[in-house]
Amino acid sequence: MSTLPPLFESMAAAMKGMSQHQRVIAENIANGETAGYKARTVAPEDFSALLAAYGGDNGTPRVSRPRVTLSSTMVALGAQPTDGSGGIVLDSDTSETKPDGNNVTLEDQLLTLGQVQTDYSTVTNLYRKQMSLLRVALGQG
Image (cartoon, rainbow, N blue to C red; front, side, top):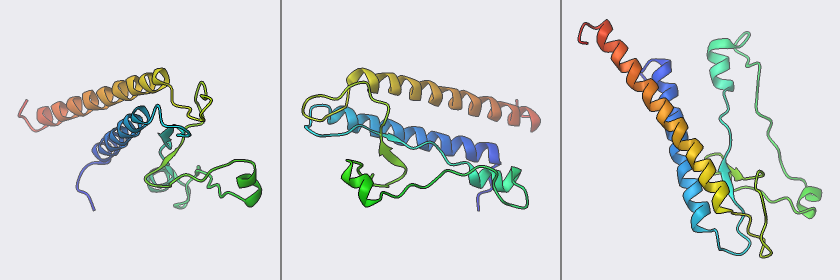
């Protein structure tokens, strides 16, 4: 069990998630000309454990993320399973698909990367402020 306050644990988890998102964007850009490649993204965080610990009724979360399993009919219609590694899923918000089946567009990826960079900067600034407040509280600031 971690000795960090929940705020710092949350910031660390958010930074790890954004780092993974940057890696997925880099993979998408690297495969931008690979025939049939489908853009991927990182699935949104599931906060049900946090709700259970801090906001749930009787330890039961009020919100949960649905789990979808592909049926044979869904597969027949073209649905493809994701690799399931670390919350990486196919990106359903793409602007175009090329004739070879590749749906990676550099513009979409760069816009997403800019948003990830902004979010990372925000969390970094929040961390810096919290550390400054702790130093002041400890009489070291």
